[in-house]
Length: 261
Length: 368
Ligand code: SF4
Ligand code: SF4
Ligand code: SF4
Ligand code: SF4
Image (cartoon, rainbow over all chains, first blue to last red; front, side, top):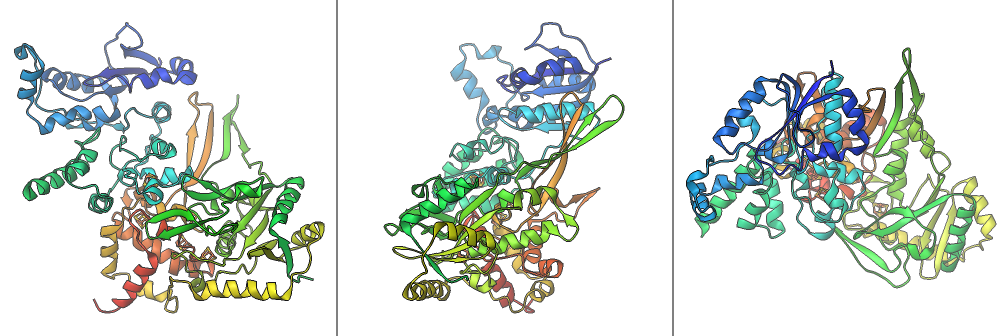
C-alpha cells in the first residue's frame, strides 16, 4: 500500500499547500509514490486516517481549530507544519498584541456570530510537531525533500543556519555592507536560497529565526542603521513575529520605547 | 631573462585578446551591485576604470577614483575561492540499477581560466588552499580539475584598502609567486614581470619592449609606498601561543556579544575551507547526488555530532574560528590561515575586526 499523505488547512492563505501543485515536474512522480488521502485543494475525495504524513498549513485561531488539530495528530504518524502560519502563528498573530473583541465590533456587523480565539498560535503550541517547514510560502525543494526523506526513512535535512551563508554561496553582494540597507538575513533561517538579496533587497525574515540568533547584536546593528523604536519593532513583528526570539526582542524594544515616551 | 617589460595601457586589450584566442575564459574585476567580483572580461572597458573602493569595518562603497586608472579598486567580497573550491557542487551520482547500483564521479568539466587583476594576497591564499586540497596523495579531484592550467595575471598593489594588512602577514603588497605575469600599474602603462614559462610565451607573442629603468624604479617606489602606508597591522610575533594560552580570555565573551554568528567572515575568507556533504535524493528514489557545499564553523550544525553539539555558544564558535585561523592552522599546515586581505573585516555586517580582537586578547593576557 502506498503511504497516505494528508494536507490540512487552518488559518492561512493556501499559498503553502499550493507549492505541492506548483511542483509541476514532480507531481506525477509524487502521485505514483504516495496516495493523497486528504487534500481538498487538489481533490474532493477525502479519506479518514490514519495518515503516514500530515502536512499542516495555518495557525490555530478558533476553538474549533484547537479541537481539530488534536484529531489530526491522533491520526498521523509524522506531522509536518508548512509555512510561517503553522510554524510561527503567521501574520495573523499580530492579533496577539491587540484587542480582538474591539476588532470584531469594528469589522463585523454582527460580531456575536464570530467564534474566535484572542490569539493566533503555531501548531507546536497545541500538539507535538515532527518537522517544521518555514517560509512564506515554503520552498518547493524543501517540501519535496521532506517527502522523499520520510519515504526513505531518512531524517530530512532542514538546516538552521543564517540566510547569509546561502547569500554568499550565491555570490550576492551584501546589501548591508555595500548599501547600508536593512536586512534580516543574519538572524533568519536559510531555506529560500537567499532570494531577496539576489534581487538586491534585504531579507524580511519569512523563514523565521536562525538557530541561536544573536538578537541583541542584531538590534544594535539595526540601531546603527537608524532603525530604532517602533520601526525596529515592526520589522520583527511581521510574518514570523510571534516566534520567540523575535517576539521577545520586539517586546523589549517596544517596552523601552514606551518608557522613553 | 625575466627582465621587466613595459605594457602600454592600450596594449592591455591585446593581452586579453591573445588569452581569448588561446581559448582561455578571461576573468577580471567587474562592477556588480556596488562592488567588484571576478567575471568575464572581453574588453578593457569591462574593468572598473577610474574607480576606487572605500572600505572600512562593516562598510564597502565604490567611489570615483583616478581618471584612466584600471586597477584602482583593491578588492571586493569575492575572492578566487569559488572558482576552485565551488560553493555548491555535485561530487558523485549514485543510480539504482536492476541489481545493485552504479556510481558516477561527477568531476567537473572546468573551463580554462585566465584571471586578470589578481592580488598578492589572493595568490597567497590560493597557495594555502592548494596545501589543503592538493597535499601529497590526498588530492581533491574536483579542486584539481578546476585548478590546473589557470593563467594568472597578478597586479601588484600600489594602493591598499584601510582594511588590508598583508604586510603583517608577509603576503603582499607585491606578488611573490604563483603568477604567470605580474604587473604594476603606472599612468601610461604597466611594468610587467613574468613568473612562468607560460607567461614568457605570452609576452614574447605580445613582443613587449623592455621597461625603461625610470619606470622600473617608479613601479618599485609605488609598491614600497603602498607597503609603508598600510594602515592596519597585526602583530604575529606571539602567535600561535597567545591564542592557546588565552583560551579563557574574557575577550571571547566580549566579541561573542557582538558577533551575529552569521558566517559572512568565513564565506568571504579566501582560505576558509569548511564544507558539508550530504546526499540528496531524486524524488523517485532511484538516484542520489552527493553534494558538497561551503559550510562554516559559525553555524551551529557544523559542531553537531551524535547526541551533542560541542560548540553551542557563539563564544565557542568565534574562538574556534580565530584560534584555528591564526594559531592551530600553523601547526596543521605550516602556515597561518590568514593572508591579511581584510575581507572578513569589511564584509562583517557588524564590523568585527580580527586584528582588533587579537590586540585586545594580547592586552588582557594573563590579567584575568
Ligand atoms: S545581504 Fe543580508 S543575507 Fe546577504 S549577506 Fe548581507 S546581511 Fe546576510
Ligand atoms: S592585502 Fe595587500 S595584496 Fe591584498 S589587496 Fe590589500 S594591499 Fe593588496
Ligand atoms: S565575526 Fe562578523 S561576519 Fe563573522 S560571524 Fe560574527 S558577525 Fe558574522
Ligand atoms: S581571516 Fe580575514 S583577513 Fe585573514 S585571509 Fe581570511 S578574510 Fe582575509
